[in-house]
Length: 497
Image: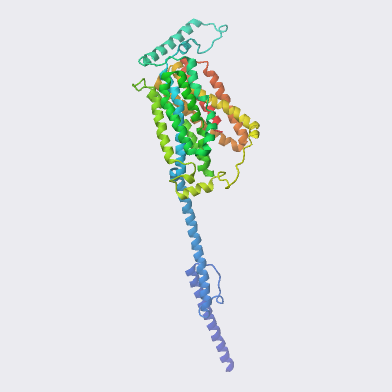
């Protein structure tokens, strides 16, 4: 009897233990469903009835873990949102920041500089009448024939060609018959006047670098722009006094405009974060092409103003543009971001922390450039020679193109302005073309081989096309135009690789 009772007691105890185990297991399952956890817990690990302090401790640890997971997911979302906002800021707000407004001022400075430089070549078309040497160009052969090898009648060919030329000239003269030309300068005097600005261009960087140290970029650019503007306003008066007085004005203008590039380069160095420097430089120097396009178009129409023979308004208009730009530059720019009165503290700190090579330790001595090694370096000398011929050919072409189009090819003044602008536009297209070619070939050939190949091909094609231009006259003017645009496209390689 006692044995039976003990057995029954053991059974009841086993049933109680089994029931308690099942209850704990059910609690564990409910807890898992509520907390979405994969941790494997047993009844011995979690007994809500027997160990409440342990239960609270484990709950707190799991709550902290869940909180950390939620915080990390929030941080990821914040990171994505901040990245998206940064891209949005880059696309929409960067261009209205003060550093890019400085780029706009620098870009427009190149536009104004091209206005002042190119105003005389276009005005020369309206100032001087066609000389006898240019009118006699109709006697040149458009295509050279070898008399010993040809059997047809050269007299008929020449008479027919001269008839076409005379028809062109008569139409041109009929179109221009009402125009009054003030000056009868020879081609030699015209050449001296047009090229006089190049005589002192190399002095400009030396003079500007000397005064830039004590005055800073802002006041240096303001001073040179003011002098250039005054000289431009005085140009019509100087031309009416004497051609040599006009040469003097243009020589002085070459000095003031010659140092423009060095000021722009130093401004970009102070204002550009390292990862934005190339973009800011490229945007600034596009002012060259923009100024070349606009100056020719505007000058072509300003010459037609029926007051004071029209051509002085080219200088007055461009001088006014330069004066307005100088006022904007003086009140909106500064030498460095630290000195700018309107820039935000956040953008200022961003520029200072991301620019490279512009901060020297206090009391530190400047490093003297190794001029001897620079001047005896073979790559530097090669770059000097190629750069000299490239800039010389570019300025000579753009200086004489208006006279060539109007006096030799017999285009009207409006057509001359549009064609010179078209030539500048093709040069811009050439810059984009050779830049794309360089970007494709640099990863394959390396930067040195890519530059050598591109420059050799571009300059060789431009030189050959320029030589062929001399074999055609106004009878084949459209062939000449096509060759000149081809020259501009290939010559642009010098500033694109």
